[in-house]
Amino acid sequence: MSEENVKNTVKEIYSKIATDNSCCCGNKYFSESYENVQGYEPTADLGLGCGIPTEFANIKEGDTVLDLGSGAGNDCFVARRIVGDSGRVIGVDFTNEMIGRARQNCGNLGYNNVSFVLAEIENLPFADNTVDVVVSNCVMNLVPNKEKAYSEIFRVLKSGGHFSISDIIIYGELSEKIRNAATMTAACISGAVSKEEYLRIVEKAGFKNIKIQSEKKVTVETGELLLYVNQEDLEEFHKSGAGVGSINIYAEKEMKCCCG
Image (cartoon, rainbow, N blue to C red; front, side, top):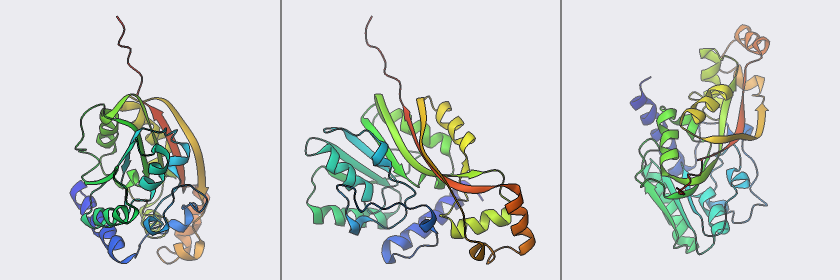
């Protein structure tokens, strides 16, 4: 599938989620509870995440935070609680419906330092070196050109800035049948890559001090997989040791010294 077709498919899926709360993805395998997280707004939580990236993001009061694939605004509002009135939070999404829903939620909350921008992650409409912290929750796996996306994150981060991103990875090699089944039942992982490939992409973009802050391998229920593959394929999958999981990854843009 071409990059454009992937984007159109993702846009169609998430536009539908934004308007009627339907979801083709089985995020029940990855999602974590925000119930005790300060700043959490249930109306902005569509259950699409695979972690809580703000938990590891080392956000400080006054920071400028960029949330990539911000959806209805869930992680933006959590970040807003941390940065306070002196900071700024910007959410980016490439579906009009999600942006509209997030702006409505923001208006209801009365925040004047949270904004939502319609844009693609591979082409961020922000100047170089303008963001302190980037967060993202279960979105980068959906981006076709991950190298371009991470180069954009590197570009907009200030010297000494960092990111904290929750995302989905694969273990081993998934057959096309299993990959397609997992796409339907385990949070749309068709675009996910291995942990090793993920780290390579991040390092190639120029990041330093790369850390895996959390990692969780999940088990997709056999009954759900059998809706898409036969018993023989399923047994082959189990024998291979392949699977899917979630990670939270942290990395820094190295501080440049301005001294002579």
